[in-house]
View 1 (cartoon, rainbow, N blue to C red):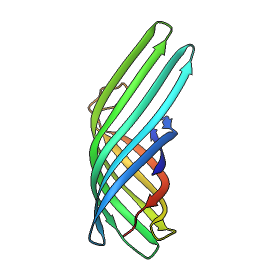
View 2: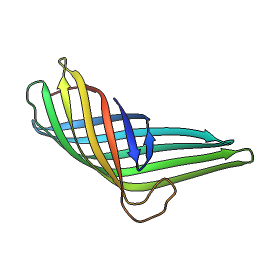
View 3: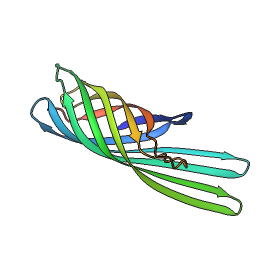
View 4: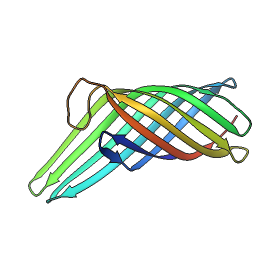
Length: 154
């Protein structure tokens, strides 16, 4: 379980969560599945904007187990779902889009007990189309920072 934040251009999503599950295949390789959510709420001049981003990705992770310190690199692929809602006095619009993503990244797990520790990571998520209202075909790059608690070491 982890907290994460995301920057998309000038937009910053400060409220986020993340959970991943991995299956170890040997000492240095695992397959990982990740679910994440980011949320942002804004209001000005009687207009409310709510944006929720949900990621569903998975892929390989390579881990170096150096005693209590375990650096890793991973390459995850999947989908990002964006849910946007605009509300005003007589307006209530809802938009949902889904885009494929590729998410390379790296991090470090620090073992503090027999089956738990801290984790920190940075990754870059690449989207094919903007999920924030701009329907372009250009890839969009997003930087994520993750910090949390890791359970279950081999």
